[in-house]
Each structure stands twice: as structure tokens, then as C-alpha cells.
Length: 552
Image (cartoon, rainbow, N blue to C red):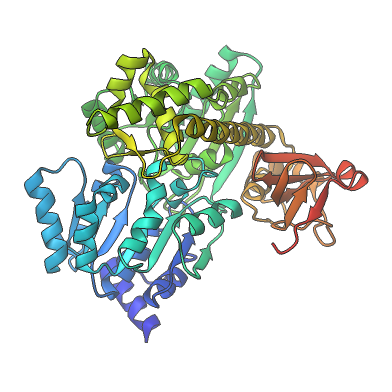
């Protein structure tokens, strides 16, 4: 009966004649009342899961989403559906007090079916109380990898969501993400306090996207190659060029414009109205190319993107997978090209490096505590800048680390107050420093895995999927190395491997980890403390460096 209703609703509301991988399984689990983690590829219709399930459940659906622009886009899509109408709303800091209350009233009286909100809203006791009284039928966490410190887009404000779920009486939880290696999945389940969850993993492969890497020795040659490939690929349709810096986006956009293409830069340094205009023009097909930093990413869903070119390597394969996933969302052939110069990784290592000094963290924790003792309703970043003389970016980083350490709580505007039972500033600083050093090691290991992808002569898709713990039986046939014939030389016999992929292991120095992939004579392990490490199998076996983890 449930299967028939799911299929009928999907057909009548969304026009679905069939489902993409993982969609129906996730809908089945949620409508049966089970907590569910759904790992579905970019473009695989994650929003369809909560739309169909939400229409079949009795009560409002809450969708926690990290970006207001993404929330707005999702609300507009739902409102286009006749069965939802005005029952989809936003609840965020852009609303007036009257509008904010109207949303809470709509949850209470049943006129609101789908409510999109930022996680900061759930720090407000009055909001949580109103939602609890409304009896939510489903609690959705979109971009759920943001809850994991292992994830590439970690957001401290997601950490409170597990506690909120319990305050709401633990309605069924649906966590959605496109990228989650096994350790990230485990942390999502733990952080959200999910109970006996159904884990639906549809697979990471996007076989329609051709994977290529071009190596260049000098800056000028690389720049010319980026312009050449983007110009060539526009014959197939719209594309995105990613650059690591704002200056790089503007330079490349100018170069493409000089070649007669409709190209514009997009980065966080532009005014909000300028960014929105570039995004609108891109979505409406008025641009051939957007040249962007990663500020242009989450929530961009244009099904007609035919290529993504990277002028520099991404900070991790997690980010790279997300960014190339903007292409080919209609299922038609697309191309992802990394134009690569070995020295570019130095920039990524720079971004990954640098934990704050313990003294700086202690100073910030002390100032937050002093502010509370002086009766301040939260210490803002500008207050900290005046007191410390430091820039906003490192201060925000310090506050995020202190929040993870349990020392401070940040409100929706980023103002900090001491957490309940907060440790002393010195103890909080020491804990935050340890967290920062761990994050730094993991980030640096991700940069090295990005280097491995660029340098491999094996099948690039096997390497990329292996990073997420997914095995591809043979070369994909749709990457440059497969075309060149080098990929067939890299095959590994997985049959009798002493440490199978996804097995839990313990290293004599680095502690617990999970085996992610095998290479010809090496093994890649993701360790909890130091991130990804590529180990020579002969050294591992000869020195007894790894053993299976008991009870894992």
C-alpha cells in the first residue's frame, strides 16, 4: 500500500514515471517512520524525497538548509506544485517580526506544510517551542555533511541539531547529502542522534561526466589552456570555470570576454545585487560561462551545464566532486577538466595550514566571558576586533573552534555568549587548539589526495570513487587516462586483499581508521586523527603497522 501511494504521489505531483537510484528506498524508509540517511549524487533529486514523503505524512515538514538563497529557490519550486501552493515558507533572518510570527502561526494551524529554515533559527527557544507544539512530521537536514567535522563544508551551527531533534520529540529525521565517505556518514548519524537509521547510498558515480586533467609547467601556459578549453567547450553549452582567487575569476572572465564569449565573474567580493544578477543571467541562459570562486556553488541547479573547468585544484576531492557535479544534471554527456600546475597545490596547502595560537583562543574566550559578566547580550565580532586589533576572518574561525570546544554559543548574527557549563578560558583554548590542529592535518591530507587524483595514470573515476570508499570494478572508459590506455595498467586484484575496502583498522601510531581504496602496491586509509594516508603495502605488512580493529 505504501509503495503504491509513494509512486502515485510522485507521478501526480512531480510527473515521475520512475525513480532515480535511492529515491524510492529513502521515501519508503521515511514514510515508515524510520530515521534515514540518504547519500544521493548531485542532481539525483534529493528534494523529491522530502517532497513526496512530506505530502504523505501528517504534519509540517522542517527543512534545515544552510543558505538563504538555496532556501528561497527550494520554496519557489515547491510553490509551483499545485498540491503545495502557499504551504511552503521561509523562516530566516530576512523576515520582519510580523512575518516571522506569521510563519510560526502557520505551523501551528496547519497552513504551513514545508518550512525551510537556517540552523541558527533553532537556537531560539521560542522557535523550538512553537515547532514542537506544531508536531512536526519530518525533520530534514539538507547538505547534512555540514554536521561533520570530517566533512569539507563543516558548519558549527549544525552541531546543535541533534539536541533540537530531541527537544522536538524526535520526529523522523531525514539527512541528505551528495558526498559522504563512511566516517562522515557515521558522524552524521551520531551528531543528529539518529535512531537505528536506514542508510541509503545510491552511489557516487556520475558516468555521464568525462574526467580530464591537463598538466602545465608555467602560469601563462596554464592560463591559455583554461581559456582554450572553456572556449572549445562552449560549443556544447553553458559552463562554469572555477578559480581559487577573486583576482583569478576577474582575469579569466575578461580573457573569455575578449574571445567573444558572454562571461562574467562571480565571487564574494561583489555586491549582493551583482552576485544575484550574475546568478540570474546564468540560470536564464544569458551567459556562456560563469568564472567563479567556490562562493558560486551550493544550491546552483542548472540542468544544462555542459562543462566545468578548474583553473586550480579544489581544496579536496569532496569539494571537487561537488563542483564538477554542477555539470550534466540532465543526464546528458558533460566534461570536467582540471587544468593543473604542480605549484598550485602550494596555494591549497597555504589555505589548509595554520592553527591559531592558544593565547589568541584564550583571549577570545576570556573576552566573551567578560562581556557576559558585564551584562552584554552577546559579544559581536566587531567588539572583538576593537579589543584585539585582529581581522574578522581569524576571529570568526576562533569563535567557531571555541563553539566546537563547548566554550561559547553563537546566535544567528554570530554574536557569542558563554555556553552553559563552559570550561575556563584556558582549558577551552587548549581544547580548541587541539581541534584546530586535527582539522589542519585532515585538510592537508585532503590536499594530498587531490594531488594524487591529478597525478594518477590510472582510471580517474576509480580514484575519485575510491576516495569515497566506493569500488568501480574496471576502468570507466570515460576519462583521459582510459582513452590514453594507461588506466588498464593500474588494476588491483581486490579478491584476497588482506585489508578490504571499508574495513576498520588500527595503526600503531595514528590509531583507528577506515580503508578507503587500494592501489597497485599501496593502501589508502582515512584515519580519525590525521586524515588520509597512502601507505606502502610492503611496509605495512613487513612492520605490522596495521591490524583489524576489534569490535568495529
